[in-house]
Image 1 (spheres, rainbow, N blue to C red):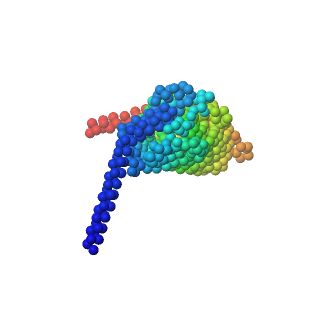
Image 2 (image 1 turned 90 degrees about the vertical axis):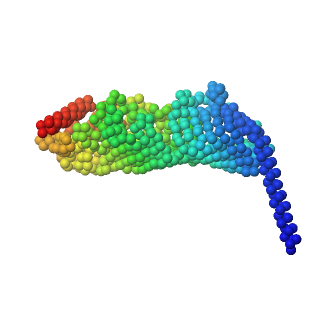
Image 3 (image 1 turned 180 degrees about the horizontal axis):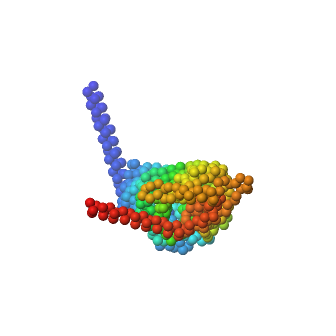
Length: 597
């Protein structure tokens, strides 16, 4: 029994010794091969990058660590850079790419790579590549492709086929990258993002993958995600945030959730920092979704094309302070279809969709010292052919909008707008209708901005149609209403509410105001829309002022001329000076009373 136990122990000792010896031999061999293969692998990596890019890129790194047992490779301190001399030659020949890349990263990991297969069969097969904390510069260059060279370049597989037979990587992960989009001609950073994550699925490069139409640049998909985006505008007046930005190359989509443009200061304080009249924006986009995005077109030609862009669950608050001087600029250049033409890249959105968008446009009237707001709620609809691309405009130079909304929380609005994308003066046409409305619902707007209070009045409907441009608008309106009665108000001072101008209100209702359309026994009156736009008026201001002038003429106020912007500004300045003078007099009076005490 003792002999058996002794023999068993000896057997296990032998087995243990053999296993340890095998591990030492394998480990030593692995270490030897790793050290001896390091220069071979280093040379092979640099050769593949250089040849595979058509001599356009070179790669340098500090160290490479190879583990034959696990099939892993770790490369430290990598720098991938383009050869500017080669790029210049290819640009002159018309064969250069639109974008160059410059990449720095601390560490690159290649896992489960079949190293012997690489050496003996010239095939690369691995599970994944991980790029940790890379810094990526994507450099845009204006490149003119020559007609005879546009399709003459060799494919990526043809470039590497002399060195490798195939490459297959199940996944590539780029973690926490800093990404800059740079203008190559000026070296200016056009856009910059931090903490970008990218996942590339099933990269395959061989003779067959070249013609696989289900792949995007040899991959089954490129997915990117940016979480917690945060930036400050160049003028330091806005903060921009986004919860998440995600996209898929083969899915041809981009989704942005929780994007916000947040002003740094309250409305009046914000406007007074600008010194002149400018809109203040407070925007919250619940969801912005692009679909049918042509990523390939953007990469090769720097052209943005999407089949659809949907803006959903959005709140847009716009504020204007009329106490500030108007400035010398012409806001006609900011009409939506005019501003679109100034974008630095060609853009085409086949259909721009709106779902559940609420817009609030507020003006501060320094005469009444009150705010008035026009609310456009539950905006739904679409705009077709949103483009600044010259070739697209040759086919169709109109963008057509069809929009439905609730106006001032009381009436249904339907409007059609036809934007002339080729117009030099921002020309467009619009027509639409407004449904039933209790006119007293207009008081939150008419009291602070027009110093008019509507006592009674019912609108049955409004039909309008006009042509417009930077110069103004011309058109017609039919306003059906009855039982209209108003009060004319005088602004209150020192916080007191506005009060009625009794005699003038009586005279207005008796001699000027027409209380109905059609009047009893008469045909429906058709009013003329005529509005001369001042340079400081925005697109939205032009629309509602055009409708307002038609309403004024219909109810009888058309015989009273509207003040010009200059006259209005003079009145505002005088009123503000009078208030300042009175305030100073009261201050001096109080100081005198204190001295007498």
